[in-house]
Length: 183
Image 1 (spheres, rainbow, N blue to C red):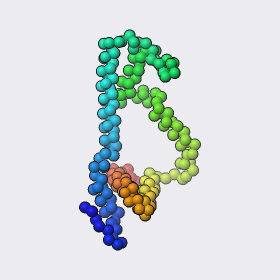
Image 2 (cartoon, rainbow, N blue to C red):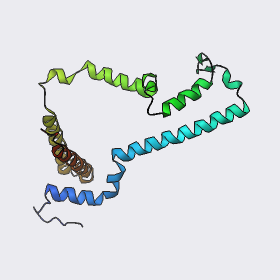
Image 3 (cartoon, rainbow, N blue to C red):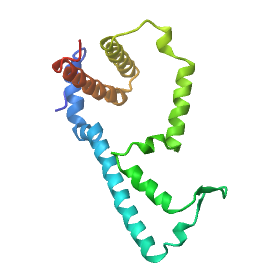
Image 4 (cartoon, rainbow, N blue to C red):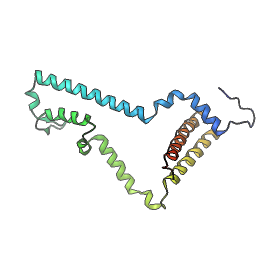
């Protein structure tokens, strides 16, 4: 479905979106949140299964060793009993248990740092409030402008990513309109 461009006969924005989506149809399913979430849940289920197998193996072969304290890299005691670490993994895999949200982790530390940096320069305090609709319009406008700049500079394949992103964005907005959340 290649459309030949002759002279000033450029495809419309809608034609461009359709062409790009047709070319990238396999990628469309790979980037959805639903697939990403299902992959994360599958990985957690695999970890949960394996940790149960490991715990059973420990109970059968060396339970006394896991009654000893577990240690941090610097040698300090992490937990008075190493079984605590096994329990932590099981609890972390249980998405119905919110207690892990209070635990420290590399990810939580990085998120906290990012949030602190954002609060140092709070753009919302420096601009007049915008409705969600106005925010979405600005995002759409910015993406379209950047996509057009890429096209003008000859980076057509890079601008195709924005065509796809804008198509998903437009679908999302249409969903908001259908559900009455747009106004």
